[in-house]
Image (cartoon, rainbow, N blue to C red):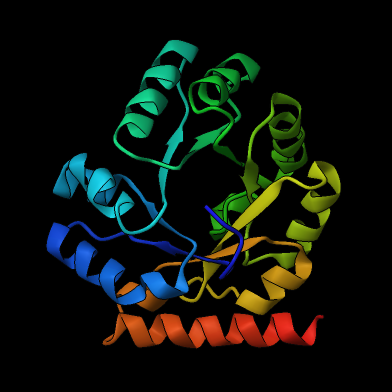
Length: 217
């Protein structure tokens, strides 16, 4: 996974053919495709392997179990071709370390979620989760594009770890605002895959990102 286009597609569909068509039409604008349980349950685990042949895959499994179970989930995801996996930190350091060890460090830790409910429990503990991610050697954290000020705050905690930021588009987040606040990648889902022309929707967001990066040089 390279920090090139600065955009990740959240592919929250359930149909295999639809998923592959959206990836085909958008991959030129993406650094990775994030898939979640709806697609894995709908299309089968092999969809990880199929998409990984076209783009790096982040498995957004939000793993939150005991260490041994966490290890097994990450090992299977990686075996199928995942480039990285998303996990929760709240089960504790031992559970998170199991993920990070199994994934060779390629774990993103949820610091704060992007929906309104994310302010109830994840936000008050976000700095602690971010510090845990840094201390345990994670690749990065998940922080909300819907609240750019939180990205800025969490950046001060984690230093140069990567920040991936969901919530751009349907949830109201703005790509350039998230990048300006310190995100490395923005995550866009429904604004792309529900569009009449997903490729064109991705292109427009890519132009916004490119324009911001040019202006910020």
